[in-house]
Image (cartoon, rainbow, N blue to C red; front, side):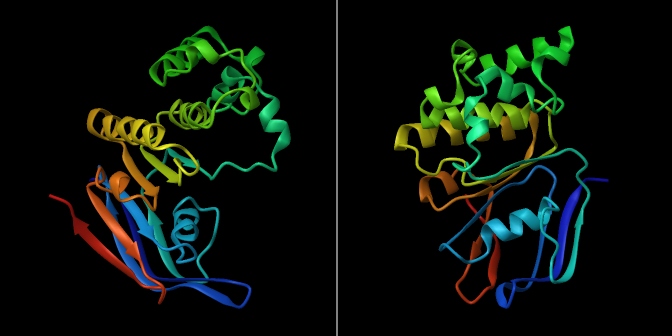
Length: 215
């Protein structure tokens, strides 16, 4: 049986403000889906519902995926996070424990993923000493090291320059093609979205146009 995410009649409100209204959708194993649309249309909210961070106000969500990695937007308020080195942040993806507790296999894995994402040479640098693109690649490595079968990314390229954004999305496309990872990404960028196999367009009237395929 292939895995699926099925949302049925999902609505969500923050206090008294409805953000999502009676949305039904399905995402299948192996999909690379973009959530796109204007700000404030509920894209990040639905991603958090899929990640089980938010509970829908009404409706049901079924998520068959067991190994889920969620990459939030980079939070500048988490100041202590910026004091970690690149390899320490990547290591947090294995177990939420400092590097010293990791065994040889884990350390080899961290090394491999840092090489994979082109951040190995930065491993000893502090997170606040590296560029925005390098920070995103570091956070992606932290997400990917657990080898999730579902990857949820909330605007992974926001605030990055064009070339770095392309780099991040080429990497996701490669991951999708080679490892068949199911990916859902929130994005505004038409070039990025074109790399996805499906997109769900969030509209201002709290609906979603689903299942548009790209050729």
